[in-house]
Length: 81
Image (cartoon, rainbow, N blue to C red; front, side, top):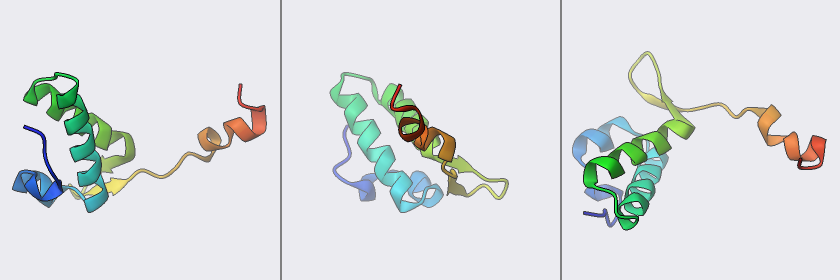
């Protein structure tokens, strides 16, 4: 069952994740469902997508991960390869 928007997410997910992370969750879940994944598989994909950009702090709230400038500057420094 794809989500039309983040307001359709289960309350426990909406309470845990910041708005941007909810958007990531919805987009990843819906893409996985379109690719034929089960609801459980799509949920796993969605959480993994959130974890790519967010991490849960010791206070149990989710925070955006700091950017790694070395990764983002690689193409500029090395010419792309």
